[in-house]
Image (cartoon, rainbow, N blue to C red):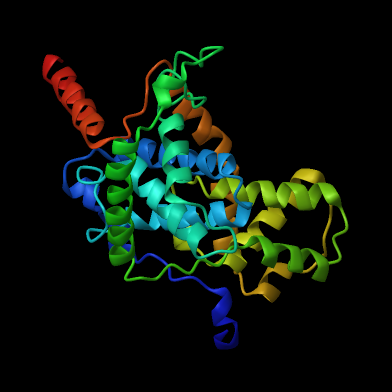
Length: 295
């Protein structure tokens, strides 16, 4: 597979997956998982509003997720989810054919994180007013200059944490090639395949950090074909693409679990805003400690 090295990503090590910087700072695992999930949703929403291509948004999500992994990664007790999300999206877009200005990025995040105007339920659980006041998400010139400096600072932190490794290989193009190779002409299978690959970006199991793009592509195709009732071939075709049965089984189960995970997160935070700032994380941890002490 050496000649295919350009289609591979650097994966997280078992040691990095065992402990994160956030957990070492006392952030509970379930809270970290919820905040990271909300951060991915925030990154996606910002990318859509900035009209960035889906591949750029997906790469930014992987960069964002990488930042929090391992003892040497960023901690939720030290970095705001908003800042890291904005930095990952700004940096990824800058390295693509669709760069965006710092002002555009910061304006979008100011809007998305405005409690009274945000269309995101984990920011504004009470719902969006029909005519939100522009003042609620206006970024003044002075505030912009401060936020811009902070954006550049966090971008540098993201680069240092990743050892300046920003390259992300996505499985989507690989999946398309595999579908053509397998002579799968069903549009519904292709659609479901890409849907599973996009959903996997939100996985609490960090699938894009633990498995190579070819394995993600094969698993998404396998699951999509099963769901659509389309038979591919009789033989164990996934082995042709260097994926063994054990890895295939794990990834299929993980991808199938995404709907339940998303529902669990929505129900768990029903009516509450997910803390995305350092102060918000600290308050949530204090509330949990106080509740535990009363039991």
